[in-house]
Image 1 (cartoon, rainbow, N blue to C red):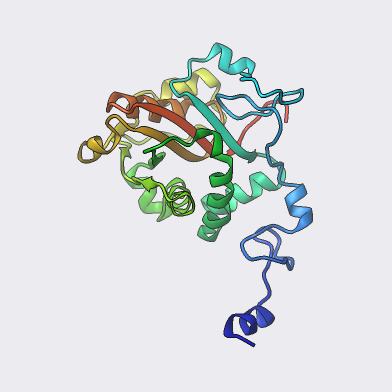
Image 2 (image 1 turned 120 degrees about the vertical axis):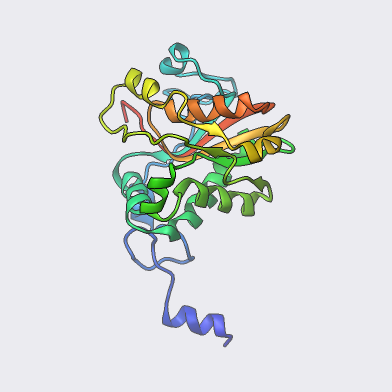
Length: 240
């Protein structure tokens, strides 16, 4: 028996959510998978929210994206921000569960298939330095790095910066969210050349109104990015 088999016999793989035994490492057990709300089928091509009806292979856009200007070309999300999906995000974001970057990044790499472009660079939504100091890690950057490793695509973790701290947006109405983050994300002057004339995939842990993604996309486009797509681990959906 090899050393890896011995280790697996002593420490069998566990569900990354509840700790139940699983067949593979860095995975969810059956019940947790069913309770996570992975997005599939027909979705809005701009924000990834699930839509009613069957996927006929045509581009569909949700009501919100028909009324809100989206500075990006396409968007997707892995699962809905509710039930076990919400639990996973909160553990990852506030519970020091940096190990969740591996399964989260793997799921995002698969969900990114419609968004991938030749020569694309993956860029995480940035944290202000004070929040990064307190949290000790940028969860979006951890996801981006894992995605880059899986997809074998370049990642620029510090392409975008937050020169000014943004207040927490929990409970803010949609319009106030957009007004609050407008201009709060900028291009790192030392990394502007990385974005120029290249397609950019911006990633974050959660999309609510899309205000933060919009600020990040506008910053990337101002640096000369050829195109911007966005990808969230979790998507808040009004009717979910």
